[in-house]
Image 1 (cartoon, rainbow, N blue to C red):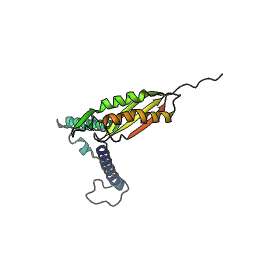
Image 2: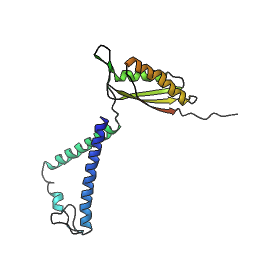
Image 3: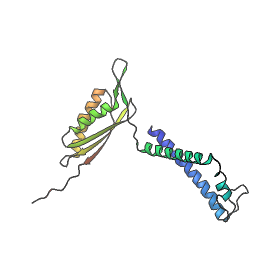
Image 4: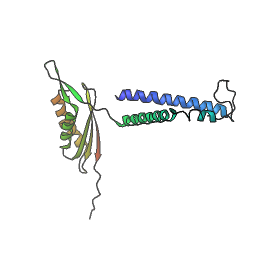
Length: 195
């Protein structure tokens, strides 16, 4: 999903950039009074982008305003969809596990995330944990965010996460590897006074 989203973003940005460069170049060429071909939409610095006739041509037609409003509404909805898609992360709905008898078992992705969160949050010095599964269902990846207590050691928390929570997840699912990106952050707290 993220690869497709990146490609769509690149294509849309490329098309928008090309359109803006062409339109800007056409207007700039006319504004600078350069020698332009006869089919050029603007002929010189005194020419307007839209004549009054062009601006008012369809105004009295009954279908004009509903079509304009519908097209603008559709553009707004597409822009909102695109914006929301930028912030949505593709989470795995399920993880495929080899059951050993030639068949594959399915584990809900949210269930595995909940178990990993509970294991990670149970560690000493971890105030809160958040886990999300990404990747493919046959080769999942995890993103773990740990909120550490002020007294916690980041190295010890990371070692505990690797040797306990992630090791339990790997052995219980039978996955050969579970690549993980871990982000650690400390709880904000007031400085203690020394007397």
